[in-house]
Length: 114
Image (cartoon, rainbow, N blue to C red; front, side, top):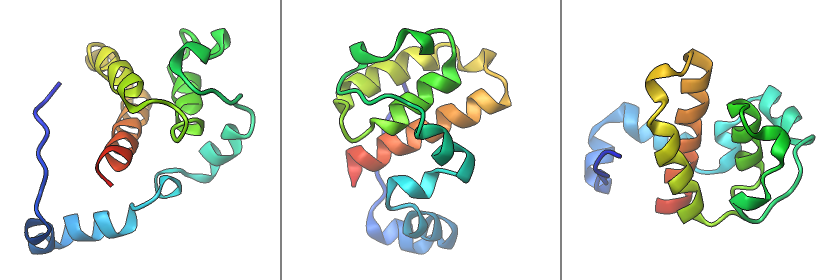
């Protein structure tokens, strides 16, 4: 995975686009659209990655939804490991899969660095 770059508050403030993004993305719901929020209602709860329902295996979108729903309950190390494995296949993802993957990475960053 790429090296983590953490910006200082001063660097963020010097870039209006970055400052605006940070200001408007301070909680999980800021990353979710109405369709995702509706879909999350059908996802089961879980406390670790081994509890992921087998129906999600092989369906990256459903897997990502399950992780998003349970983000606050899952250990960040497990999410990080999952993201690292998924990144190996990022080049083969279609546009929707890439967008969903980036959403998960953004949520991971939010929870790790908030």
